[in-house]
Image (cartoon, rainbow, N blue to C red; front, side):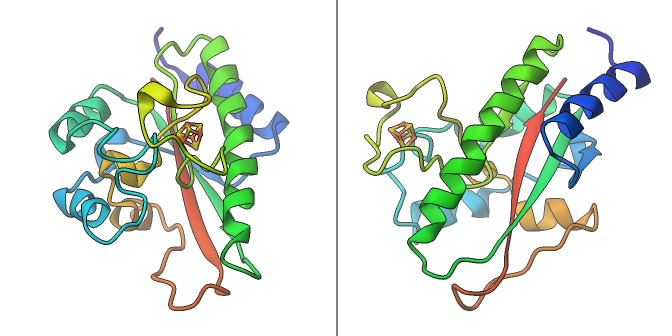
Length: 183
Ligand code: SF4
């Protein structure tokens, strides 16, 4: 499929129809992939080895780089959230991710055979994650978050003037980002 202004307008129409307005088209070459992100997954994150769509169930950093290099069009979608309690985040993320997977499907059906979505947070669909791709409860729906694909989300989204900052308390506003690889 060639990618032109008309195609973009068609996809913009899908985004708006599904209620997405806070997003930007980006050049995938500006998606920053970094080894330090994987190190943060391996050491310091409680989900390492426990999330079916998290490392080590995701490709190596070199393979992630190759994956992003195969695209010429991508969209970054911004989500803001403020949790009263840390445990509320799971349900918040699961709800948004479930809507996002429908968006990926619609973009695919619009003729974008490569459409692939990276969730705005870890998968979160199940209360107890199987921790393994092979035993995932909904393998057709689970997708990795950008961080699980070694994306330096901070450096990437700042290039497009999206807000992002390290939070120092749970009740501060969160800025989360989903990446939709389109073409
Ligand atoms: S769908 Fe469930 S089992 Fe599969 S990765 Fe997501 S949380 Fe884990």
